[in-house]
Image 1 (cartoon, rainbow, N blue to C red):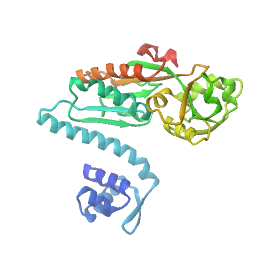
Image 2: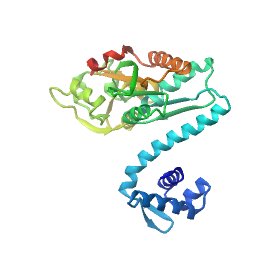
Image 3: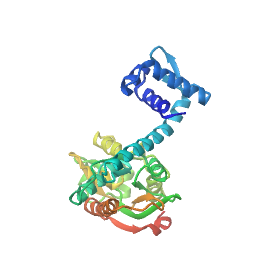
Image 4: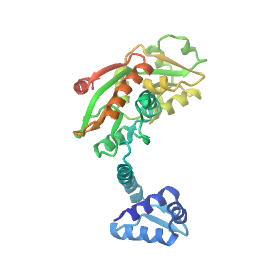
Length: 309
């Protein structure tokens, strides 16, 4: 199994045809076909069902693809860094965060440290909380921002941010006239919220659904999806505050909850890896950006992790 085979496999998975993958990689169609065939021969199972120039990935191919992409990201990072060392360039920033943090606090923090001199290259990627942890554990990124829990070995947790969850609803709705949304008011609404029951959703259910479960009409994997569903009039979104406050949308109102449902996120780096000056400045700037964007932001120490959860 070599790099050429993995790149060919990734390209075919992404593009959907051997010919298109060849054009993208600057190789001939027969060369791509042979690379895939050789990879299948080594693995001992088929990755694609063939139908002329187009191919359909097998179930095994989808399972393998995620691992291959992570490996290729790491290899590309090594290649880029090797070239940068040769050119004596400053170490680039590799930052991965959950979608809410990647689209709000991360860019704001990068802007804050710009006067200090940003590297020529910045890699900012959004991923699920589990994928953020995976990237930091495998040291393909220098810094990660993710929701709690982050109790994994192999991570250095620098600090924890806390802010209360909010309700997002159409500005023309009757409930938007209230300064604070009560639990009783929520029980009369169709709720749109998160689906991951091991993170924020668990705290929402524990805080608000003890006596009677909420009417959760729509479950989704990102707060932005929930907010846009509320914008469409499908219900009210019960979400973390970062997306709601960091990406205000015309026609929507953001209201605090009468019941405190805390959202927690952590700032993590690979365990034992020295943190360079730029990353240290970025970690400090993330706190500043969070205090600016989030109402009721509280910074907590890493040692509070288990007690908070």
